Image (cartoon, rainbow, N blue to C red; front, side):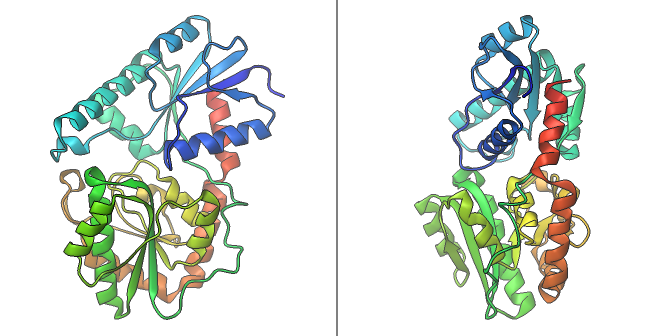
Amino acid sequence: MTEGSICLVPVINALAGPGSFQLKLKSALESRGIRVHHNPLEDDTRAILIIAGTRHVREIRAAKRRGIRIVQRLNGINWVQRRRYLGLRYTLRAEMANLLLAYTRRFLADHVVYQSSFTRDWWHDWYGAHAAPYSVIHNGVDLQAYSPAGDEAPPEGHIRVQIVEGHLNWDNRIALENAVAFTQALEQAAGKRVELVVIADVLPALQDKMAQRSEGAWVTFAGVLPRQRIPAMSRSAHLQFSADINASCPNSVVEALACGLPVAAFDSGALAELVQGDAGVVVAYGANPWKLEKPDFPALAQASLRVLAEQDRYRRSARALAEERFSLEKMTTGYLQALLK
């Protein structure tokens, strides 16, 4: 048992992203005999991991004065509000969150963990360098829970593409729009019906809007599913489309790879950093993602035909890449090195 405990802040009750990461890391640390909690004022706290940011700056500063090591985990910067008007309230909240993240990074953190090299370069470009050392640690996945082993298989009569997100609403509806556009391009390129399975919490009004704007598209809204069901869904799909633009290190991508599900994506954010070799296809965006311009859907559809034609090879490569680079053990070891240095 490691002497002292580790504090994770804030407590995150979310469907995916940071919430999923916190659950996985907490479980992995406890399996190594490390007590994990969420109170930075506990006496035996050895290190605090701030997942993005926390409003409890006073408690963090007090812990820092007591000699407790502060590590910050950073994903991307809130930026869509700078390209698309999403309302004054949303914009103010997003910019205030950016300021809090930047303050923690520059003045509180003893070490910064970036989710990807893309994320590191993004923060350094927009907010400058910082004195604290840093490391890049990709998200990891439980290779036992997320596995190709199972009775499920993709359908033979049509192509099934899935996306896995947390919430899809008006501020990030472009992810859903792009997913539908990609499946329509793929259907035209393959000459075969394509079903898009959306595993996410989608506003009913947004579902209705997409149905009106994408007549003829086959979209199945699966809703929010328990994490235990995601591997079975992944085994029964041909492709996973990574819909988020300029994503830092999406959990859904590494989880898909672990299940042997190839990933189709555009080269924005960290996708080219994550999906390599024959684990899927990543093509040039074909426009400016920072302006939320439409990507080159026909190019990605054509590239995806190779994956559909050689499913066995691509599925094996996806799993092999996950085993090599994205194990939960590797991720946990990286965080322990940052926290207990």
